[in-house]
Length: 272
Image (cartoon, rainbow, N blue to C red; front, side):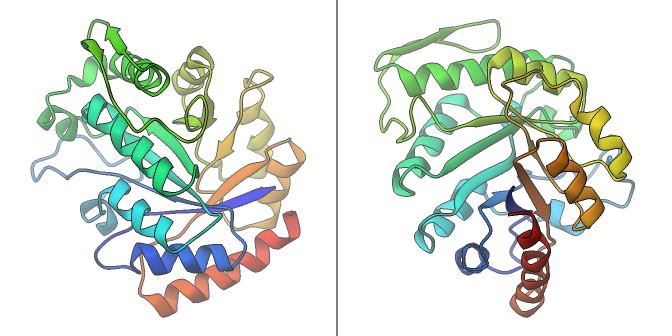
């Protein structure tokens, strides 16, 4: 079972270049970084994990800047997003950022996307929270068109552009692997509909693992995010056919981060 690390890369934690190097040196397979463009000062949307919202949500670096720094210090580590809030992003700029990162990293990008939960954050980007699911569908489809066609065009309800040239194209063909984040049936249905992978968060109790995975159709790739470093959870996912997981770490200074990575590496080594 492959195991990566998911984290917020912030200005208060270990810098992305040294962090990625340390992750690769300890045998992990991937670094997945989270995204929030900002947090509105006045917010009615409750944080899903319970208030108060943790500090890292306020301070993440841009994911593609962080992952480019990570690419420069590593040679085999998969560089991913968990997740990019695609409903808050310009789709043409995002297509170029992802393909540029795939080029400079030698084809090591994994692209996790999601609709998000913070309605005030969405509105500040001009996104209507009520239609974010349909918008996400169209932006995924538009990305695929840009990455796979020399003269790409897309005409939808929310995304509409006439033929464009855009290079570079991704190194990975037809494009980097895409994973839809989210634990809901809507996220899984979107992954199936789009022909991409599913990236749910881990359940807390191992007895819940079979039920979480039961609805997944054959052929859909699954990467489980934020898995607790507990043998009973890791074993349950391994026994139920999951081949990719990531373990979450908080942004911390270097000494604390390296100590945590050493401990996690010893745990996941048993599931290789």
